[in-house]
Length: 165
Image (cartoon, rainbow, N blue to C red; front, side, top):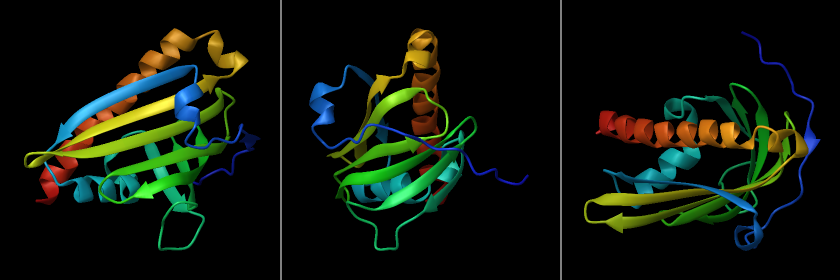
């Protein structure tokens, strides 16, 4: 199937401070049987292999990737342009969505914290967002759908990491 180039809708620019002011958060947590460095690499570099809704990831900035790096993520229902705000391998990364192909949010930032927990890693993945007017009408339903998508993906991440050992 050929990929169609989306029409982009610019979002309000986010930095780390949006985590303190966002009106809505979607929080998911998991314990993954891997080191924080392995989990960091899996989430930032191989999402299309274990995140079921992702159809492709295209880096739009050259390696090495760090804060300021950009990429396009194609999901089943939409595409997003991401910019990494924080990049601390094995500890934390934060990405802001700068544009989206379907106007469901006005602003969105993902903040992922990794902390060692014995031989495992505790993953805290929080989406901070401001829904669009279109999304407000179906917000409870959409929130449940996106929450399940991220919960399922963290379960898939554990399976994927286990299969690579």
